[in-house]
Image (tube, rainbow, N blue to C red; front, side, top):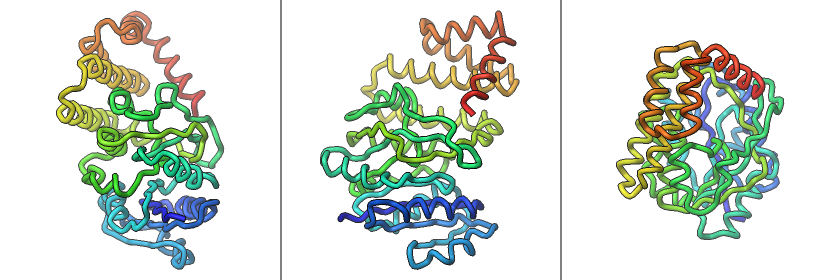
Length: 304
């Protein structure tokens, strides 16, 4: 059996980190090294993991963010395959076995991702994530530029492919995983398993509190992708920009930030003026703003 390295960046979530580690130890596939990179936790993370020292590799580092912790983990990984698992997410028992089986049966594929369950703070499944626009295999780069449909903590990548990357971009936070998957998908084909293999804990509080920062970082990632891919069709760029602006228009409206909502809805119109969804939101924004905001809030509530 080929070795799999699972990199877990941890920060001040002691109890959840223990649950995450246990989910990896409970895998049906056993040739695994677990690398927990403690990114300067000030809670009981170190103490809670003390009993696992014979079964995991625990690395403590000064706080530098999740991306720096992932990069440290990559540098210590010795497996032929590498999985990334956030410290509040969980692997289902067959996650690694099915991912490795897919990669072994498809030697031309550089990395594989899957559907996931969304769970709340208590670990209860609230929905299934199987993005209708993202159930794709092969060269997925053009689709991935338009929107990030890869759920973090579901990816398993060949170490040889990962070694050709420059690691996770430590200058950004929220969209750093999107950036990594984009760079991987430029050079390697992807595989998809339409079965939930990960439990992904939903917490949008950071994004809600930092909308302008997240918007700026996502635009940075998108512009970098445009500069790298000079042959990217104009219509793909237009659709990518329109979707990004439209999504943030709805997010700003959800938080009551009408000025920023107005700014980005106009940017969406300029990016792709004939897009039906953009035009509908534009009209509702100016003609029925209160009902539109109520609809957004209701949809967010139902998802949660």
